[in-house]
Length: 118
Image (cartoon, rainbow, N blue to C red):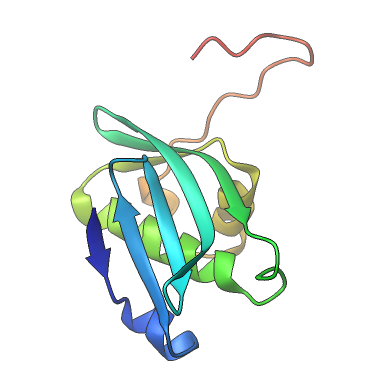
């Protein structure tokens, strides 16, 4: 597990840390050592595919998922990989925040009822 004390996270709220946890294939945000937000991904050749972001009960509505999304996306870009936003939260974040356009490969939309065989 690689742990970072992200300056954005720490300045957002004291006691907030962000981590890329490769063992569990997710980014994590901790508040005073307690897991508060996760963003799960699949590590693919040349890409990080975000598949799910979840804020734990008791931490909703505080902007913590946004802090984790910012950290995770910056980490992917710094690694030289590209972003695939299958996760609706990450996709919405990317649409609202400029600066990542050149690093995103948007997934093709599937017709309703078509299976996901990725």
